[in-house]
Image 1 (spheres, helix red, strand yellow):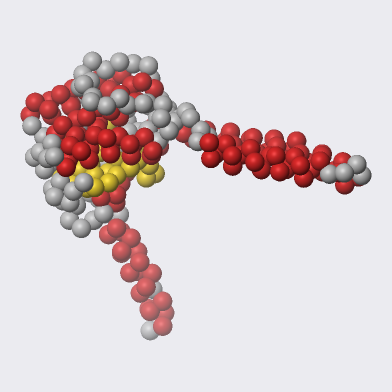
Image 2: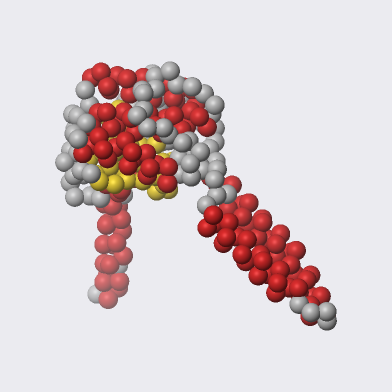
Length: 266
C-alpha cells in the first residue's frame, strides 16, 4: 500500500502538468483573427495587406487576435500559450508578434518573440499599447486601435530593416523606433561606471606590495566586466528567418517566445 501511495502524488502532478500544457485551438489562417467581431471589413483588409507586406519585406509575422473573453485565464497566460504553440505555414514557425485583445475582459497583451525583442523591447511595446490601444479601446474604437497599434509595431520593425511599407496608415502620434533600444538609461551608466571608480580607488592601494597586487587586479576585473556587459547585450538583436509560407502569404516567422512584450487594461 505504501508503495502505491508513493506514486499517487507524482501521478497527480503529471496529470495536472499535462492539463496545463494542453493543446490550444488551431492557429489562425490569416494575419487578423477577429473572433470578437469588432473589426470592420475595410479595416481588416487594410490590416491584412499591411501585415502581409511587412512579412514579405522583413520576415516578421504579426498576428492580431480578438476574443470576447479568456474565460478566467489571465490574458498573459492565454496569449503566451497561443504564441508558443501556434505554428504557421509550410515552415511551421511561430509568429514574431502576437497581439491579443479580450474585449469583454477589457484587457490586451502583446507577446514578442525572442528574435524581435531587441527591436521591440518591453518599454517600447508598453508605450505603443498606452498610445494606441488604450485611448481607442476606451472610446470603443477597437478596429482603429488594433490597426494603429499593429501598424506602429510594423513601422518599428520596418525601420530596423530600412524598408518602407506602402500600406501604413497615418498615425496620429510619432513612433520613435529607437526608443528603449539603442539608448542606455543614465541609471545603467551609473551602475556600471561607479563600481569601476570604486574598484580603481581600492586597487590603487599604497606603495607597498599590497598596493602593487591591487593595481594588478584592476585590468583583469575591468576586462571581465566589459566582457560580461558585451555578452549580456548580444541576445537583443533580430535575426533572419528560413523560407516557407504562411498559407498563400509571405515566408517568415519567429523563433519562440519567452514572455517579452507588454499588456494592460482599459
